[in-house]
Structure formats: C-alpha cells, structure tokens
Picture 1 (tube, rainbow, N blue to C red):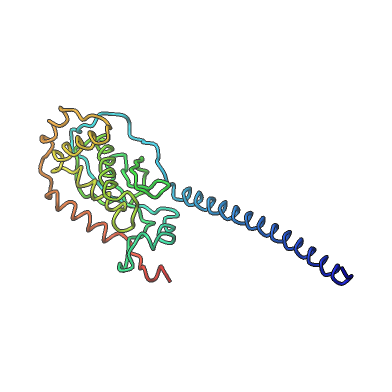
Picture 2: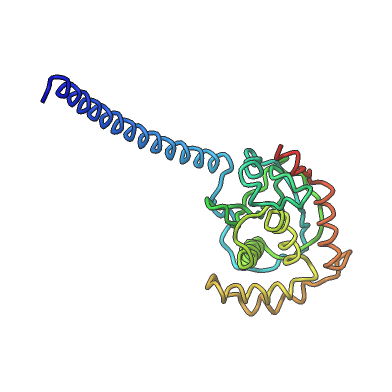
Amino acid sequence: MSGSDSESSSKTRKFKSLFKAGLSKGLSKGKEGLSKGKEELLKGKLHVEHALGLGHQPNVIPPDEPGLVADSRVVAIGWHPVPGGGWLAETGLGQLISKKINNYPDPTQHWAILVGDYCHQLWMDENLDIIYINGEQAQNEWTLYEVGKTRLNDEALREAGEMVIYNMREKQKGYNLITNNCQNFALNMLDAIQIGRHKEFGTALAIFQRATGKGSISELFLAKLPEAEEQDEKPADEIVQHAHQVMEENTTKLDTHQSLH
C-alpha cells in the first residue's frame, strides 16, 4: 500500500470514529432533551392541576342519614372566579367546543348549588372527568341568586349531588365547556332537589343507591317525601327555566374566533 493510500485510509477511519462519537453524543443529548421535555411537560401538568385544584376533595358535610328539615330552605345558584380556569379554553379549545359555536361560557366563571352552609359543585379529576365535590360556603365568596326551595337535609343534598354526577357520567364522563359543565350540573341538581320534585328524588336516589351500592335509603324517608311537597311560588319546570335564564344573563361569553387568533 502506497503512502497516499495509507494516509487516505487513516483519514477515513478517523472520520468514521469522529462520526460515531458525534452521533453517539447527539443521540445522548437527544435522549436527554426528550427526557427534559417529558419532565417539563409533567411539571406543566402538575402546575395546571395545582392551579385549578383538580381532583377529589374531602367531604365537609357531617355524617347523617338522608332526611327532611322542618322548614323549607332557600336554594341558590352562585358563581365565583376560578384561578387558572382560562387554561381550559386555551389548551383544550379544539376538543372541548365546536368551531360552529360562536361563543361559549367563560371557564373562569364557576357555578354551583348553595343551600344553608354548604355548596355543591361539579369539578374535575386529573383526567378532566367530572366529579362531585362540596365545601363550606365562605362569606362573600359567591355571587348568589335565589332560585328555589328544598326541604332535604344536607346529607340528602350531598347524595343528590353524587347522583346527578353519576347520571351525567353515564352519558359523558369527560368535562365539556358546552355540554358537560358546572352549569349543566347546577340545573340538574336544582331539578332533583327542589320542592315539587321530592317524591321523584326519592325514587331516583333509591335507583342510584342500588346501582352503585352506596347506602340504603330508608322506607320512612321515602314515606315522608310526599308530605314535603307544599306548593312553591312557581311550578318545578319554571324554576329550572328561571335558573337557566339567570345563568345566561350573568355568565360572560367568550368568542371562539377571537380566542383562536
């Protein structure tokens, strides 16, 4: 082999060696970058979950049996702002709403049912599937609108909230800004608990308990429900319609085209 051939062969081996080293280093950095990317994605997901407070929360309603209270209580719908709620529109807009819809409810404006000292709400778990939560009604936290009355006690209301979410999840378990949101829950729960619906509530709750194995409603409670059906100011259907109108008039609407551009 001539000197020039030997030199050429040496350069080729050196080039291959450098190429392999560079490729190995590049792959290593690529894997490191992918790992960091996944880590950042996880951090972002956890940050969003923390900001929104996603997931189940402790039940604050004292243990009791479902029952009736002596006097009817006011049922209110109320809203308060949700810190970080705008993320729902920004990151999931394409999946959560149709392009054919011109506007949608502001996801930072959260609605719930409030009776006595407690609020009853639709919320989301870490997979953005709907769940039921409750909490103590903090002073001045909610903007309230009185819409009906009920004679159900707090435990009966808690079970009503669980039942409503169960029925909603049977149709669609994932949260949706239009079809499966806090407003839908509030109207469904109002319809279930208001005076004029107590007898139907007892039947529905018994079916729910049999389907889920959660509790066993007493015959005494069921027998007393018809006695609690004193006439309210409006028929039950009109109360729900009125509540829906109140929500429409007091919920900010966001334009999809403006949000997407």
